[in-house]
Structure formats: structure tokens, C-alpha cells
Length: 166
Ligand SMILES: Nc1c(C(=O)O)ncn1[C@@H]1O[C@H](COP(=O)(O)O)[C@@H](O)[C@H]1O
Image (cartoon, rainbow, N blue to C red; front, side, top):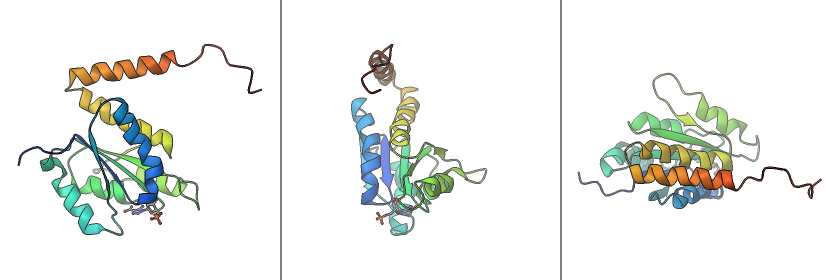
């Protein structure tokens, strides 16, 4: 099948996850990496999950970023259905502050890995940066953009703390 999809799929269990997952999208934007963002739920849209994950590689995706909260089965189920690398982002839940999401994603049985990130925004950003690092292995121009991103980040950190917040 012809490769038509962008390299990164960002999937999430619910519209409510976008507030977190948009940070992954913004990090990919900053690196000029195209992506497709979709709502896919192992619980609420299992057929959609199955179709997406079974077809993701043939569609042309290279990496999947999957964010979910609470009983966050989406990343693990996606990983069970695709050979692509899956990075899981635990979305912060109201009841348990994302501890439930984190443990649901990180405790995969040996054999079906999900690269699990931190809870919330930092995890979403870092999932995008890990996806970028994977893609940069075979894309020299992207590797340069990733280096520049890190250099800008370093340059933006003051050497001494401002005392204004004290
Ligand atoms: N964890 C999952 C899955 C899944 O794992 O398939 N599908 C939806 N959800 C999660 O339910 C939470 C609440 O969803 P709503 O805000 O729609 O009630 C979301 O964080 C979503 O990721």
C-alpha cells in the first residue's frame, strides 16, 4: 500500500485528553514533523482502535503516541496490535491525579512494550521528542532541527535564578 500518512500518529482516548496531548502536537509542530491526531478508545471505540492499530504501519505511520487517562488501556492495546513503537502518555485523571493512568500504561507484560512517559504535559512533550529522536535516526535534516531545538532550549535557561519570585 502507498504511504500516505504522516510519520506520527497521536491517538487519545477522549476529546478531554486534547488539553494534554496538544502539547505533543505543539512540540511536533516546533520540529516541523507532520502528524495525524485522532480520538481512539479501546473501551468506547474498540473497532476503531483495532482498525487503526492493525493498519497503522501500512498507512505509513512510523511512531504512535498514545495518551489516555484513568484505566488507560489504549497505549497497551495499540502496542499489542502494531509493530510500530508506541509511546504512552498518562493523562492526569481527576480522581487519582494520573497515578491510575501511569500504572495502567507502565506495567505492561514482557513482550509488548510501551515506552511510558511522565504524567501530563511533560510526558506529552517528551513523547513527541522521543518520536522525533526515532525519526531523526533516518532523517539528517530532522536531526539538525532537533539539535537546534535543544540548543534554543539551553539558551533560554538563565544561568542565575531571578530573585523576583522569592
Ligand atoms: N483510558 C481511556 C480509554 C482507553 O484506554 O481506551 N478510552 C478513554 N479513556 C479515558 O477516559 C478518560 C475520561 O474520558 P471522558 O473525559 O471522555 O469522560 C480520558 O482521560 C480518556 O483517555
